[in-house]
Amino acid sequence: VLGGKLDLLNNEELRRMLADWRSELASTASQNTQEFEHFYGSLLPILRPRANLAQISNASLRAPGDFFDDAGSKLPIPAGRVDHRALINDREFQNAVVEKFWIEEDMLRQYRILEPKIEQLLETLNSEIADRDD
Image (cartoon, rainbow, N blue to C red; front, top):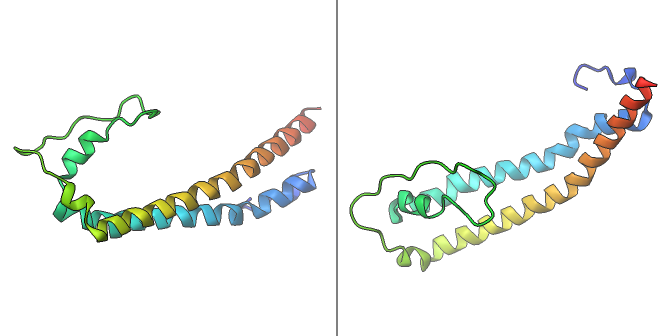
């Protein structure tokens, strides 16, 4: 696509889909960037001074239905567990979590929009390949 060789394809629909593919991915990539920036720019700065990240990480290594077989090693925790109730009641933290939820919802919406487009592209590619094999 980037090499300008779309004219080698016989299928006009496939040519159009591949030409538009970068813009199809742009909004999903933008959502992913927003999620990354929020986590590292908003949420972690709130958590660092108020929470024991190792304790939180160890508690969340295995989530129900997690598809990772090896979630990694537990992190060493300094003596004593941190009570995170004050963090949970902190308005800034609550708002950052709600904001993260909104961003994640937007990402899921983007993936739901993108998924059928990927399936359609794969079907069209398979059709093009099958036509070339004939």
